[in-house]
Image (tube, rainbow, N blue to C red; front, side, top):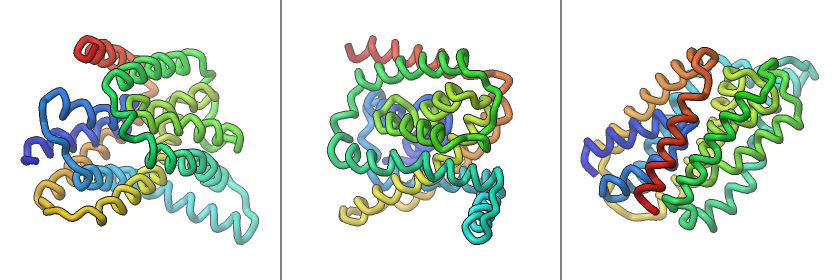
Length: 265
């Protein structure tokens, strides 16, 4: 892989990991459409490390507060909005941890189909639009009950299918359950931390078993570009989502689906 390919794919990962348009779909489709060779597992791990670092740095104060509140709840029995949010994140992570192992081991290759990606891009784009229109948008992430957190976690399982979008489906579920746009997005981004960490760990374990020559310059460039891009994406998305809504992303998903059907049918 040359440096230009690395920059393009790292930019894609940084942008699409947190926008509701599916990072896995774009990383699969762009090399196919442009005739590039597969970027390889090393690069995938590197760009995921970049996005993980970005979301953890952006929410560093929130993470410290959530950890502190969790300790206070466990040791002193003190309940608070932060401890409830921390529990909601744990509950919402459990479904994808169990389902993810099955999909990763048995279904990953069979799901990398452009027509399947086109279908999921279209269907879940329309569901995002419906949830934004139908949701009451009158609560925030700290009010999530165990049941609602579990529902969002179960919805997140669907993101193991390329084209669904992890951020897209969790924001959709959050909106449908009455969260504001910003609250649904914040919960989705916080929920990404354990998910990206788990996925990155699985990929790293695969990587250490595969001998090969590592291009450290490309790896470092991909990590930095994806991290910086992801941080800026989170910052501007949260600043603008209440104002612009989800319609621009829905329109993009519909247009992308139509393009894919035209190319691959």
